[in-house]
Amino acid sequence: MKKIFATLLMLAVMLTSTVTFAAFKDEISEGVNLSDIKRVAIILPMHFKIEDEEPSLTEFTRSIFDMSKKSSREIIPYNHIADNIIMDTGIDILSLPDEDARRVFKQHVAKYADSYLLVTTANNIKKTQFFFDLFDSKTGNLLYTFTLQGGGLKKNAKDYGRACELFYEQFDLITEQQIKDNMKAEKAAAKEARKQAKKKNKD
Image (spheres, rainbow, N blue to C red):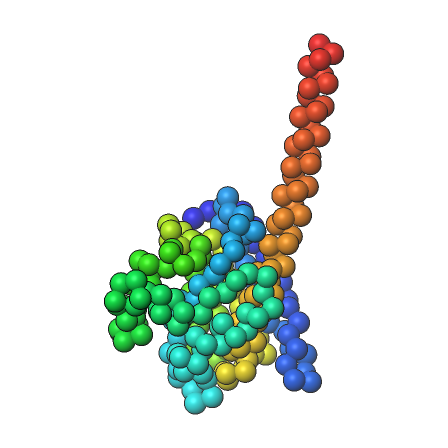
């Protein structure tokens, strides 16, 4: 899928009293207007605990939601979607193997949210990499992706939560920038249309 926007920046991350840096890259899929995304459901992340201080899958799933409190979007926790699915279909995804749970989630999530967020951790390397992928609930198309290089983030529950917080901060920031860019483009197009109309009238 083509991408029309990409950034690669160094982001200052405040951790306790120390300033560290984490490199990140984010991309908006072609034709996607992020301001149209209102409700984001959290799907079970792709995460396997390796080290003792890392959060478990359940803890990390909860943390992805807990770190969303400042986001301008409505973020729906995984358990809420699970509750809705069992009420509507009788299927308890919390009792299913992880891959089966994700499959059923994807089949039904469009009833409850317009998008869903899949977080993947690559923690089998020295510095964990975080991949935040936002998908359209109806089509399954990728809408937005945010990749965070671990940098000074440690392999513990607190810093994994901080990585999630950074995603939401950038998601809102890039949405605001896209809105400004779209408004600017619309004004330029309207100005050009008026210019062409005046030229046509003179002719």
